[in-house]
Image (cartoon, rainbow, N blue to C red; front, side, top):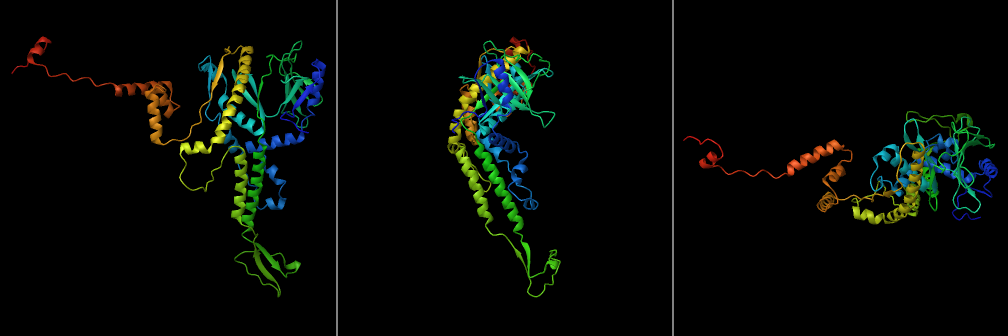
Length: 456
């Protein structure tokens, strides 16, 4: 059966009565698709470089991996960072047309969290981010939630509720959180529940209502996931482990023939000599196959998945001069085109996330933010020669695109305001025209100016 791009984590509720909603929430904990869940967890492990041995051990006998450790590579996070260039440089977030320092301070680690979130959304196909307000530290904090169950009313295209699994003190019992938004004749809900459907209040919220009226969770969804990258990473890890075993065994395996069982326990060493019975033989046997061919086959796997994801790989053994910025731009043209399509997707998500932030801050009486919000994503920059870079900066400075302050920040983004003002003052002093030299005065001029004539 074809899915036609719909999420497998959908629960459709025929009616919006409270009992129907609660029954569907109770059953949702049992509706997760096992294979989808495994693929997601595998991708998360490879992205965060955790639990990787468990994914490799099943492909090797225990005695094989006792010879060498499993080969682990970090190609999944590298692919994700290379593909999702949109947040490589933090975007310019403007509220009422200008940067809001209060919002930038209260949105804790927003830029770093958003970049991680974008990479995971590309890898998993979709991802969710929850906004919460930390009362103790007086700031917004963001939590990435890879897997969320969505609840729909019959005929709706937008979910009215979300649930997701959380850590439980008892590992044998699963625990979930549910959020729903305000709908006509039905107030939004917020509570925890277990696999049996037993509900528990969150904190002091004994009424289990949603204080925000909206769900504080935003979502980005791509048209497909990138599990092919994860699967290729697994193939590469298996192949490289096989190569590592081959390198070890290439030293040779000692083989005796014509020896009885009682004589088979012999230790090898260049300082040892063996007296073999008549008809016996001794030799070292190495595995066949070319290591170079095996390595090239492994590279081919990586190159193929890179091309399928609008990327290219430059291997460490590549020769020749480094390509120029224009050449790199041509080589990365497919990735640049993919980035353009990402802009519209993440611009919509940024507005959704901002509306949630705005509502959360309003409910907690922390900060009142206006509605107008725009995001200016930074252009992708490619390396230029020193001469090209200087000419570009001179042109921008001469045509008013940049100021002297912008130029100083271009070379040192960490300069404080005091350092900037001091440096600008030094530049102005150096650029000030010198005072014109006064011609020597005659005796008559000195007298007119109140000076005393010099006696001869």
